[in-house]
Image 1 (cartoon, rainbow, N blue to C red):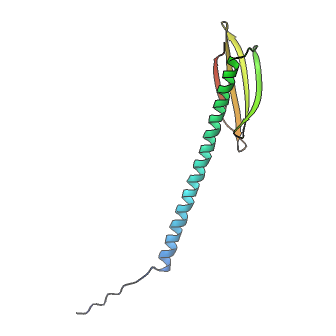
Image 2 (image 1 turned 135 degrees about the vertical axis):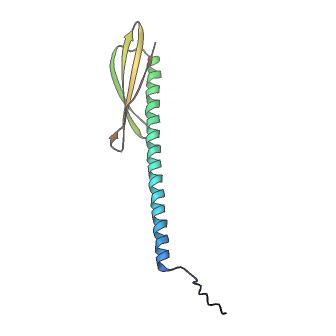
Image 3 (image 1 turned 120 degrees about the vertical axis):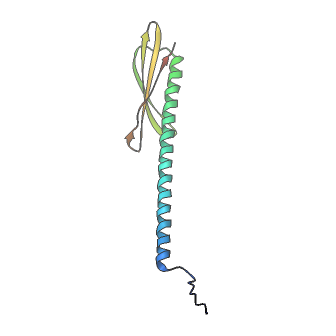
Length: 120
């Protein structure tokens, strides 16, 4: 009884093309997730900067004397332009400040950050 097993040494063109399609799709998926992660990281950093700008203004207000009313300024921190507004109100002889920071990322308004606290 003779053996006549035929063995193919190599891959067909169809197998190679399917492999290339799978590698291409996987690479595109990884790049999409990487870009999304980087954008989320930038958004998170901008949110942290806005929060710190609000805290900084609230601490500054605690060291100065202000009359009731609205105030505003603009600052740029880490290349992120921020607009801060604050109001001072008096409740039972206690002055309270409310600071709101607004900012934009890639032309889109982000949710404002608002902090309040007693300043005297």
